[in-house]
Amino acid sequence: MAIIIELDVMLAKRKMKLNDLASAVGITPQNLSVLKSGRAKAVRFSTLNAICETLSCSPGDILIYQSEEEEHESK
Image (tube, rainbow, N blue to C red; front, side, top):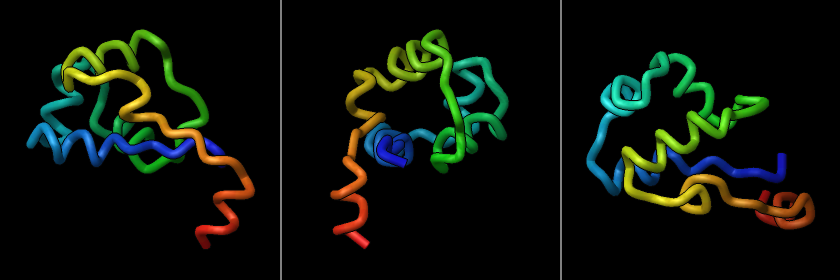
């Protein structure tokens, strides 16, 4: 997939646990874990907004585009 999720990086920078973020955003830790691991097929803008608001970041800090070509080169 060409979109890389770096939620774990932002959580580490903010010294926040996944469960704390899930509680602040209002979603289950399981759903947030699916997003964090890159297995999510979609994310609601309202959820992304709440994550960014809680972590004081922008969507570009969490969602990184990597072309398919770059992905194959990095493996």
